[in-house]
Image 1 (cartoon, rainbow, N blue to C red):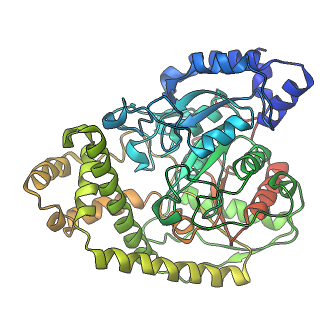
Image 2: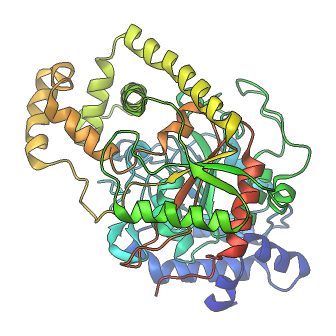
Image 3: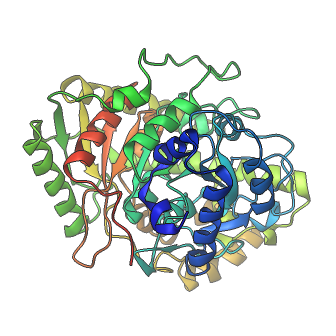
Length: 492
């Protein structure tokens, strides 16, 4: 099978070819590897090839919904037994996983042929993918721009045609941000829907979840069926599955929906005119499709929400760094300077401050719930501006020069209260201020690739649904995809 034939099909289509005997898993794997070898050097999407493992698996008798389809996993939280999960960090590049992650096992049970791992920023901490350990992942539409993060390698691999769908994860927008940057589809499932096993009940109080990035909505729907094929008895609670499969729900008409939209940044920072245009364009498309669309937004203090998110984020970084150091004996220099700074700030957070911030998460859920009593879906930009240039969000050299003595002297708590630090954090969040709401509240959300900038870069829009609305979101995305298809679009 040559690349032109391979690229024509999504994962469901490729699986159908295998099931019919029209192509073998080995032939599909060969096509995927050839494409990877042809385009990966400039993109740097795949950082850990697993060709030998994949070749042996392709010769096995495979079964499952996606038997024989080539697949990539993210090098973060998606452990493959016997291989290191580097998490974008020098400190973990030699630590081998002792078991498959539950999601990896479910992908294997579905018959997928995993042949590599994709790049991610250190511990998935940024909305760009430029780790020192793994190098920069570039946007296939323009190599000078970011593919987004933290699932930037996954998104770049999908749009470049290496695979039709790839493993991803989302703790603050890490599925939706790269999907928006690369012009592909990304659904973040709701809290507790997808297992975090076998080592965790949930990540980041349930704000982080596993999922995929795909070229077609139906692939994401089938993947969600795969990932939720059976209950997670080690999870914090049992999430009820819908009576129908997600694939069946995605194929249904969503009906006439009430959709509220906003382009105002929750941080009260600037939103690029192209991001505003993307939402206006989507609102007009939705009205054309028969939905009721009007300006509206939940009554939430976005700046306070961002502050509470950062408190939890930094403390999680502190715990992660401390655990890695205990596990590996790594020194501070084995972590990026930004990671060290976030960890130091996290260690300075008091227990009462931490608890109070987490308590406010409840109010955000209630306030978003009140919005969804009137509106089925919230529409916003996914990101506040077109994909930034590589290096544009680097920590300024002056701040780096300040961070080193601050960390050495152990005064990160004092430095974190300065305007220099706060403005730097705000500048980074200002590019992605819309995505954290769905993580904190545990609601499903998706980025849909409906828009292109004047420069030809993708710029997705975000839809946030109510509790257990994954099926509704998939149905709406499927309707949009039918009206304005994107899967055939490919970088030159």
